[in-house]
Image 1 (cartoon, rainbow, N blue to C red):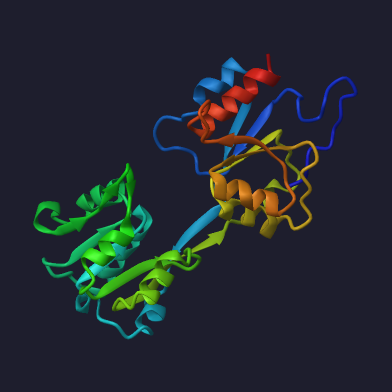
Image 2 (cartoon, rainbow, N blue to C red; image 1 turned 30 degrees about the vertical axis):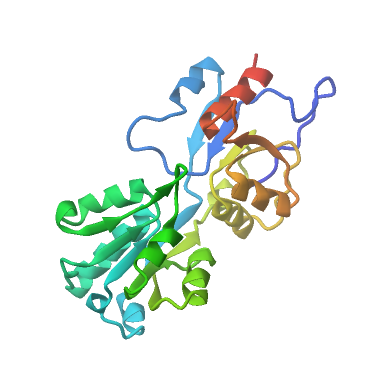
Length: 262
């Protein structure tokens, strides 16, 4: 992907009108949240997933030499982890015991379990404190369990470190990999705005285009971690969410379009 390097003498390069936007996510299967921006601001919007999720090969998983049914509690921090865990169980022909506990990082993750288990007959836990989920409090509450943490290859270190530092009986198993998508077909395509949701999207950009320079391309970041990943690469964050004015990245993009396209 090449940077947009055109200049207008009468206007700051970062205030030029926007004609094209790339969203670094797959095309929505249901309603496109950006649809109302197309005609309202006369922009073209493309979707493209910058990362791919691949299950771990069953032969690689067996190298762990573990029996999933030996664990009395399973830790889930994402819906993707739930999907890959139960797909793995199916492939291994394993049924988790009915008394298995599920420790979840949020209510949304906990409720997602309903797609895979008889929710009311299982023990599903998530804890809210001051409006936020405190998964560490759940570990302490269930400290005598044997924890399994199914995760991605590039998971954060906070949960594994906490489990280890506090002496919990646990095992960390990588069950899926998050890898950069092949974006080579975008090499000669220009976008005025590129929207990123995770640091992995930034990594994918540079995996595909190591010499990428931002120049006049405006970048949108959702969340502090994504914005930090941009800044660490020397990039300028032009559009940011969440904020009091823009709780979603879509609303942040619209505020920007309202300023430069009208």
